[in-house]
Image (cartoon, rainbow, N blue to C red; front, side, top):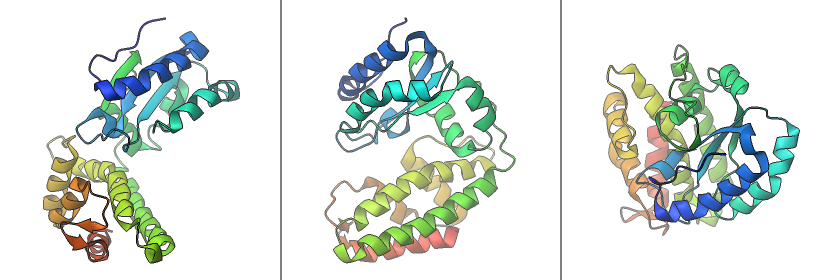
Amino acid sequence: MESLKLDGIKPELKAVIQPYLIKLLEIHKENIISVVLYGSATGKYFIPEKSDINLAVVFKDLGLKQLKDSLRVINSGISRRITAPLFLSLSRIATSKDTFPIEFIEIKENNILVYGKDVFSGLEIDEANLRLFCKKEIEGKLIRIRQAYLEIGLKKKGVEALMKESLNSLIPVFRALLRQKPQKPPVDKEQILIEFCNYYGLSKDVFIAILRDRMNDEKIKGEDVEVFFEKYLKEIEKLS
């Protein structure tokens, strides 16, 4: 069994995922073809103890046994913000890459290989219906944002977190929509927001302020979070 490839990983991140992956590999051995790290953990927006750690694990054979055998390891990682990994088989990648194009584009173009073979870089994804997928994602996210606000609005605390979490999940959609331009879209989140807002005529200041906010104090740029939430909601409605 080959060794892990963690030299380019931040030390604080390596300390979390190394023992986790060693246990996973001890269970599945050669049945694991590849493991990649993706999402915020690959770049400058990763915040230790706050950001989620996303992994995709590719198996030769994947069934209920592999899921059951992994339960204890996966559960041990949740408290350290390692979300349940995306378990995939090679055959499942082939049949689902065009059903979930946004997710697979993000993994393909923004990942760090930490074990095994690179199975994502050569992945061909049909982008013909990408705009329609993005439209559905944005409209669905708008509905969920409103619903979440109805649940937490009276409690006050949490509206700031709602904006951060929803924007974070929208950024891959924004990046996918930028693929309409001749140039390849950027990977950096702030640059994605700048280019996207310029292209679609949205207020980039609203989105960038949310992205940069680290305070969790129910204020953004010194404004009451309710005031800022209204601005944010209007921009998403404009886009939708």
